Image (cartoon, rainbow over all chains, first blue to last red; front, side, top):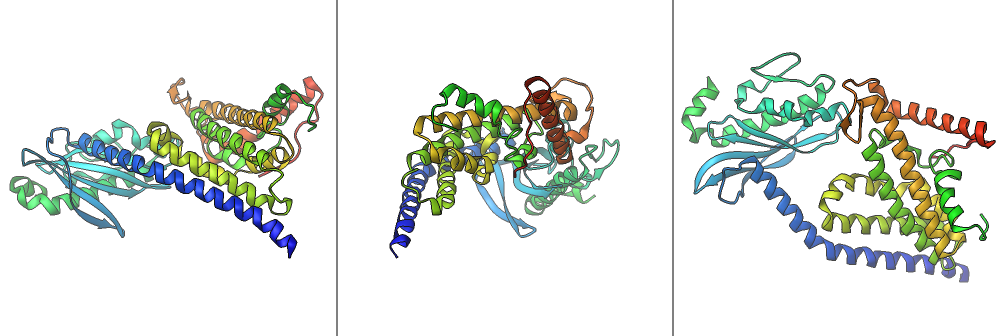
Length: 195
Length: 209
């Protein structure tokens, strides 16, 4: 009995003290971290629609594979200038988290990868601007991944086919969502998409 | 290790004599996993250096308080506490660094080398030697990972620290996990050969985790 107390008490003391240290650290760092993360998100959204002057707030959520994503309408003086959606696509070894923005003609304005965990040296080549720039100016029907030379569609990075497919699928889902939500409001562009 | 060993010798011991990766053969999984590039190796090493030093110091201070029968849970909890504190503080105040290193910090809790130094060294030694041992071992770990990183990144990607040096990728397999084992084995064998040939040492023979 005496042994039990002698062994247990110091262990409990260590756990309690360590728990207090962690709780205090969390309490002090949480507000700072929350603000920093919020600011980073705002900056990322701002980069997706640099011509928007009003603050960009979530307009709603959409779901894909049981995951929930947000979409946004970027406005300048109350007039829409871009539609943005967060999205993800399954790559080779991770979900590739992205932001996609559309111009008001429903063609892709910009694609930005926020987070991913693909094979270094192979899959992470989808981060290269030369791959992502291919999406710019494309409409929904053009977002098809091709293995080989293409100007009309999206050319997969050689050695990173799965990751390229992940990005392309994620972008396509996001564009589809944005077209569904905002396409009716932009008639001329909607005609071109359905063509 | 006797208590008379000078601090300088203790410091060098972590880098050469008992190098965590190539001599003690501990924490080989992270050593293979993160060394696809020099930069990754460096960041992982620095993160380990911090946690190891803090854990060593704490264990050394509490060495008469911790009951030997429950020492392992105590050490693991001390490591976990420091990892959590560093992770939280860094994610709040050092965002740019955290974005690069955040991935590695949480992994450190389960590193064999940290637990091993707490058990083998810090629990039997005073504060200052434990501190020096932590720094030395941490630096030894960092240098080993960087050495592996240089080898693998140069052969696999033709670059160093993300800067392209060669126009081609000579041996793509080196940055894959398979190449990690190749690199580790070759490097360890090469260092053992140097040790035997020039310093008359016995070389590392035991395996770890």
